[in-house]
Length: 428
Image 1 (cartoon, helix red, strand yellow):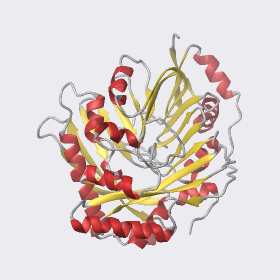
Image 2 (image 1 turned 180 degrees about the horizontal axis):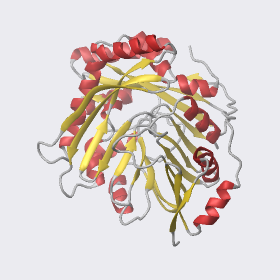
Image 3 (image 1 turned 45 degrees about the vertical axis):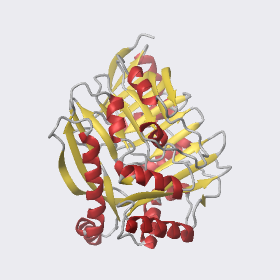
């Protein structure tokens, strides 16, 4: 298939983005990576839409990362894909025995038939006939928010069971097994029905974030409003931006500013963040030029529609010849979703959590033609299997010796707020 790249000026960019996502969702496989106009030194576009498959890589843990190295060679397009949390079993001597209601592969990437890159009021279309694609998209009606969720939302752990589990994890901390662990719980609905793309639009409207994405892999969907970057490569520089520290927003500007400053001053939240920064620094040393790992920002406070977040930035210069698989083996799964020490934390996660994480706390991202890449952390995300009619989302928090189990449970509900709003559901 011979691809031609052609740019088009858009009269109404936001409307065309909506139409383009409707168009892409008609394919069996599509990925839409949306920055929601958040600008930093790393973002390369406003929205990347990839649709249809020229070639694809589907792999389970055990040789998957080496296959990825071979798959991404000499591709003129951005290659979108995702990494499942259970790739940990390939990187370390670990296993996943918990039940999985979704069945996503551990790793999936595809070279698309068509690709659209939105920047400002322009779109660049890569296709065999770009003008035809442009006209086809223009002819479509934009999709309105009509999630129409049908199903009964349940929780895998009730409040009492969650608090009991956190108390037991704190015993491991007190014994010195770990310093911190990210403990997550699943909310789910069986026999669930919803319009996945409409659910994405509604979620993105009430919680716009820099790493929002809609990913369709045949009957399975990733519907995400994640604010967190896992890892990004720009030339020979590698950067990671772990989030640890969450506080609610207030509609009252004075109260909102007070909440923000309380988060900034919180010893507990700063301690959680610093622990993970140290873990990320250690991870990056495995693929960095000696002496180049540094903390660019420690415990910065950033505000999103639903929450304030404490975010740090750690970077390094890559050692020459470092492959993507080497980088991922050094850093995945991300420290913000595991704990410290990392391996022991993951062992306890497997023991105390009730379901397999799968794509949740994994990563969605892209690999650019020049070898650069950008991957997020899959949190604040709905996962849906349309054939099995199974809907799932997970939320978690960092458990340290200072953690109050009841407060950690409330933090989980705060993080679930936007998804519950889209599903028009409540959890006690």
